[in-house]
Image (tube, rainbow, N blue to C red):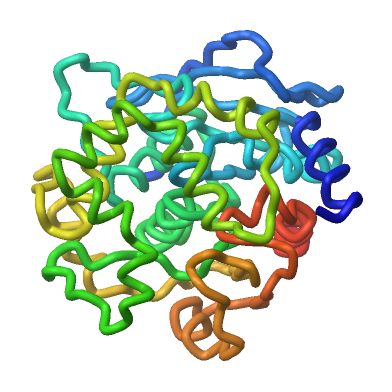
Amino acid sequence: MDPNRREFLKSAGVAGAMAVAGGSARSAGAGAGARTQSGAAVLRSVETEVLDIGYEESGDPAGFPIILLHGFPYDIRAWDGVVPPLAAAGYRVLVPYLRGYGTTRFRDPEAPRMAEQAAIAQDVSDFAAALGLERVALAGFDWGNRAACITSILHPERVRAQVAIGGYSVQDTISPSAPSPSAAAEARLWYQWYFNTERGRAGLEANRHAIVRYLWETWSPTWEYTDEAYNRSAPAFDNPDFVDVVIHSYRHRHGYVPGEERFLDVERRLAERPPITVPAIVLRGNDSGFGRPSTDPTADRSRFTSLVARRIVEGAGHDLAPQRPDAVSSALLELLA
C-alpha cells in the first residue's frame, strides 16, 4: 500500500414532502470523530413521525445546510474526511444514520422494519423538515445516493444542489426485475440473491461483521481497509433493526416482498425513471468492484438535465467518500459557490 494513502486513511479516520416544520433536536453528547464549529461535531437526535434519527452536526449552525447520506453497508464515518472543508467554509454539515444504522431508531416498536427506496428518501425529507430546513444540498453514495436522487426528483425546489456518487440510482420496483445477460454482473450481486433467502437472513444475523467487511474489500479492491477503520464503523451495524432493514430493502427491490402502501404511488412514479433537474455533479470511482465506469457521459447527461460536471475519480472504489473525500467536498463547494 502506498505510504501516502496509508497516512491519509489514518488521518481521515481520526478527523473525524420536505416542508418547513418545527422539530426538536436533542444533543446526545459528542461521538467518536465528531466535530463542532470549533472542531468537534456533536452527535444529536431528532424526532420525525417514524424515526428518531441520530446524526452528527458540524460547522456553523447558521450556515447553509449540507446533508451527507451513507449507504449499505457503511455509516456516517464514511464522511469523516469530507466534513472538515465544508465546515471550515461556513456550512452547516448534517450526517444522519439511515434507518437500521447507528443511533437511528423506529419510534413504534411494533412497526414493520421496511426500507424500500421511497421510505429512505422520505426519511431525508422528514429529517430536513424536523430541523426546519427550507433548502439543502445533498451528497450520497449507494442507498444514500438513491435517497438523494429521489429527494431531488420529488422536491427539486428544496434541493439547491446534489453530488451523486455513482450517478443515477433510482430503481423500477414495479416491474419484475430481469436477470442480467452478463454472468459477471449477476455474480457481483451475490449478496442480493443471498439476502432473498432465509439462509441469507440467518447469515446476516450471525455473521454481519464478516459480510460487511468482505463487501467493503470487494467493492473497493484497490483500497486497503485497516481493522482500526472498520472498528470505528462496526457499532453502527449492531443496530437492532439492521438485519430487518437490509433484508426488506433487497427483497423489495426485486419484487419478492411488498412495500408500504403509502409509497405505492411514489414507486409508480419512480418506475418511470424521471430525470433529475437540480444542479448536479456526478462522481464515479474508477476502481469500483462493480466494474470500471464508462467514459461515455451520455447516460449521465440524460438523467441529470442540469449536469455541471461528470468526473471519474482515480483511487476510489464504490465507497468513494472515505477514499477521495477531497473530490466530494470540492464538488459540493463548487456547486454552492
